[in-house]
Image (cartoon, rainbow, N blue to C red; front, side, top):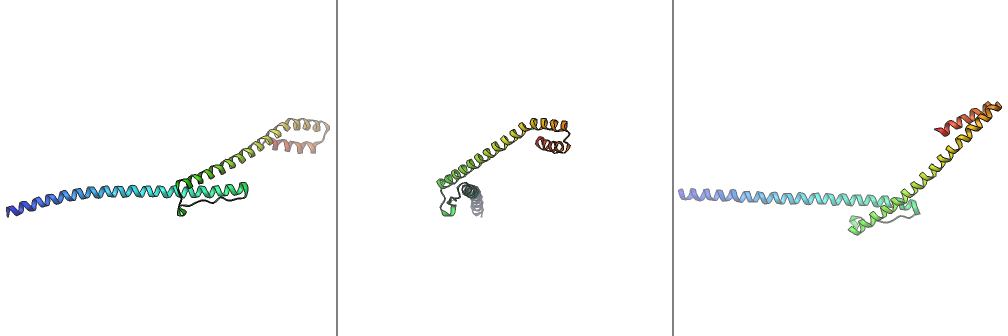
Length: 150
């Protein structure tokens, strides 16, 4: 019986050792699976973002020249090159958009500068019309001056 008890204890010790190594391996496998899941989520996010960028690029392109660019999606076999092409389209469309914004801002800035140049002239005319007693015209001109100042 002592011999059987000894073998049983040895077997239990080996079983605990094996369970320990198995749990270490299962933890390692679990960590690898988690890392793969995170990578898949990141890849899905990048793919989703690339598709949205492509949709935006198509809209911007169609606004610019009335044409629409086709994008290759992941289900169509998207590669790094196709994603780079999509980002390139996005950057071109963004560049065109910001160029048009710059043109608009420059135009509005010149209009404001022109209006500011007209204020002294308008103030001089108000004084002239006041001295002539033209109150209706002066009232209208003061409203215009107030609008230009705001």
